[in-house]
Length: 171
Image (cartoon, rainbow, N blue to C red):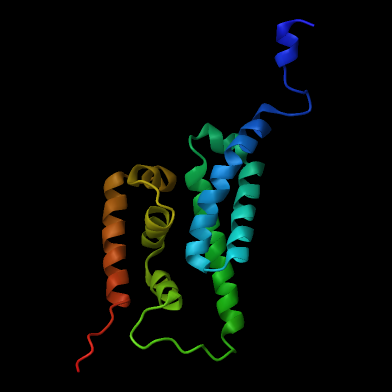
């Protein structure tokens, strides 16, 4: 057997599948991080990340043609996490809420504040700060300029700060 024949991959493994297999651990970690920050539940976050990676696998050739697929996977994971959170919220609407320390914003307040943002501001905030993507990657993922990302991030953060402001307690 010559050297060229020994290096060939098995015919049943497509090159695109090998690429996805190589990229999967990093994609899953990024997707999980975003989903966990939104949901606060490890199992739901893992489910959302797994679903996002499965969707990426199905569209792998198209995603890799456009560049780095990580922003797309992170965005899908964020959307899936928000969907899970909304389903949980409607199911929990009939249950009495657990008392939290007065004056301390909690995750529910954050989700309400995120829901109050415009869709573009919410996308930028989730991709930029929850997924820790650089501004250029967010801009590429959303199809806008870096300046637009900066503007939406600034306005979104200002709205979040206003919505989550803790009133000063006077003694």
